[in-house]
Image 1 (tube, rainbow, N blue to C red):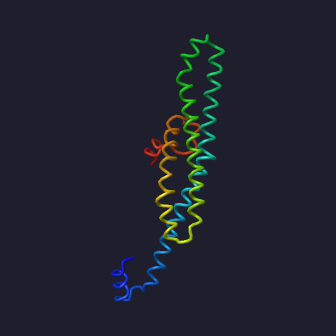
Image 2: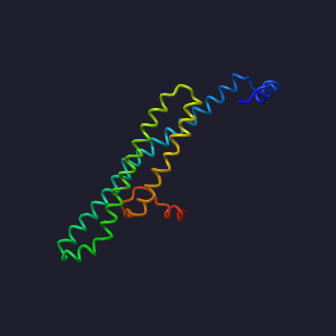
Image 3: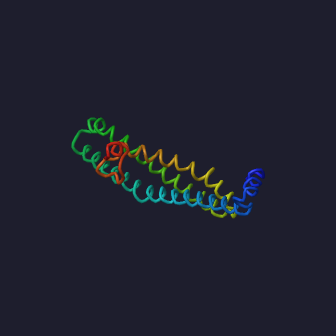
Amino acid sequence: MLKASIKMFESLGVMTEKELEARNEVKWETYTKKIQIEARVLGDLSMNHIIPVATSYQSQLLRNVERMCTAFPADKAKELNARNLKLIEEIAQRTATIETKVEELVEARKVANKIEGEYEKAVAYHDTIAPMFDAIRYQIDKLELIVDDSLWPLPKYRELLFIR
């Protein structure tokens, strides 16, 4: 905090320097706790809801591919299965990326949680952990477009637009 600001608050009898420092300390801690909670929720949703649903849908697609291979000659089955095989591969890549990014998020939180000062910890959460959310969310958003609506555990964006 700037010395001029501290002097102004003290001269007006609003707060002392110690009170201002304590107020900032509480703000930094509150910010850190908020990002900690968001990180935990994102990790939990990703690993315990999104990935299982995506892999379940992937399994459905695989069963469909297998059945097509038994119902049609090889050339025809290959042609008919092309889209499903592409989706199966995309789901595998996106779920693997989510898992990796969540692991990185957990490790970054462990490092940040060892920081003693509240300001330094808040900066670490802001600069390192919060930006990781976007990479995970991007993959989830792409899976949302692929996975069958009846399986998806959360409201989809398009559904939220029409909720009254």
